[in-house]
Length: 427
Ligand code: NAD
Image 1 (cartoon, protein in one colour):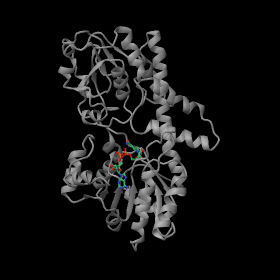
Image 2 (cartoon, rainbow, N blue to C red):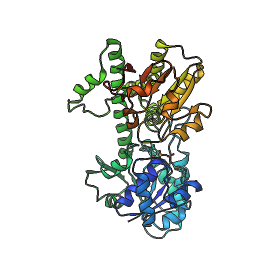
Image 3 (cartoon, rainbow, N blue to C red):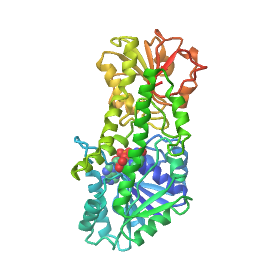
């Protein structure tokens, strides 16, 4: 089928490459001309494992093209996905500026198109958004009634760092549909994926995404709190998590204690859900507490560090900047919180990341970026903040050139039998 995707960021681009892998033709749309040009040259605008080779092949096979022209994209496809950002406003509520703008543009494009076309919302939006904002905008600007064009809400569950794997091996596909005709088309484009397809109404699909993210963030928050208690008791929380994870009601994944969750989704989505709940007169205390817990978690590593040394004027090596391994995304990265706090306290940061340096440099242009050896050379302490495989290879002698051998992990990466004397933030 011919598909267009409006918004070529992390989700839009990975989804485009995923659909191309299933044999579809995809038109990527973005407002940023530079991103469009890169995609047309087969160059990804983000780092994601395996993306470059697949994008290049898809562009060469003319399965993926990119444009800034939404009208053209709608004319030349049967279904358009909205995959633009839905950031937080200052009060935590969802900012729907981009979604509204794209809905308007898609509405205008629908006006100029004769055949049936489906609009599918993939951006994470609070329940009610598609019905109350997207559809009215589409109707107003197209001069058509929903039903004359199709509408779906198809939430995205991919994990950055494993986005392509997750696209091709999803646990399930959720389709919230306006009517059967829209849902059938959304189902058809996913039919090669051997996975359960759950068809719901639109509002339910929107809520499923928030519920999933809330459960995942809760699991991380819980193991972090258990880890904080374990730390005081001298217990290794990873030994605890291993045994707890055997319980199938709990499961093994997402039980990695550390410096807290980051990334573009969990905090913003939970904040948006809390705001929505507030408007509805609900008070989800547990969900609110998760954000508080997570906010304090990155600072635990600084507390630990300050027990060992005064940080003012010291050189601190920071290894790992992205919010998790496998991505260059530094949005809401715990490393940013830690770097800010340490520089405020007068420390000098020397930082390394295999893929996220350029993104972090935009945020912290004044710190030093170097390779691992230079970062560790004469450092007064080393903080490991992302679980990149590269850090798992570090050996004892790699830390020999440090002035002070203080090695703290915010993510569990170092091997006890390889490196002496390191300590974890919650183990
Ligand atoms: P992003 O910021 O990386 O990408 C958004 C893209 O949309 C940008 O390239 C931007 O230039 C483009 N854009 C903005 N306005 C546009 C317009 N009018 N026309 C065309 N393009 C426009 O965002 P993202 O991380 O890909 O997230 C997109 C949505 O998917 C969000 O709602 C997010 O919550 C959700 N989501 C993200 C993830 C994730 O892991 N990043 C996972 C699941 C769901």
